[in-house]
Image (tube, rainbow, N blue to C red; front, side, top):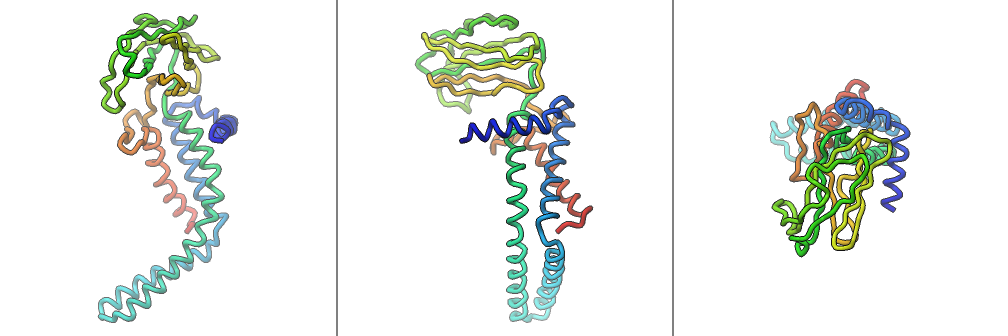
Length: 271
């Protein structure tokens, strides 16, 4: 099911906005983020009773004033009445939030799936070094990993690499082999074939394209292969937030979307 959704999302969104990937990454990020903000704002405009929400906002503002006045005069009963009325108004506003959410959830989910596979990294360019790693069970330390040589690709330090114990503190104990590859641009991805103890697995490497290959693949033989690519950062400086799993593109996306939603709502007087 997830694979079907993934394929659908990439197919639909590549057709609609795949051309954005030919633009500089900052421009693409801004376009996607502002488009998302516009979608969220317009969905609210056309699916809610704006007159009702406007009057509810005015009522809430007036009730807050009455509560402050009642507190100043020490009228506790009035405070309770106004709070109860304010809660009823809040519930009324909450009930109308469902439809805008339902209308926008599918396109936003399509966009999010597409963005996670298209905006996180810069696709490797022709001649640019790409670090490739293969992780194995700890029992394979001391063995060797072998990538089958591929026409058009160059391995800076050879195709055969010893498996060493990983020192990455974010990973469980495992073995790792590392290569640095570079190659010419071409329309079809290169197929990397990794061999270990008679078993093999594959990982595609796209070079010189507008899209990049899957950065990490978990294989059936307890092997994980990874392509280390340069992450997309807004203006080259906005970082990710690893502790909560936010890559740099998503941090930038939220930084742009949240204020633009507020700005558009004020410009269009949307409640």
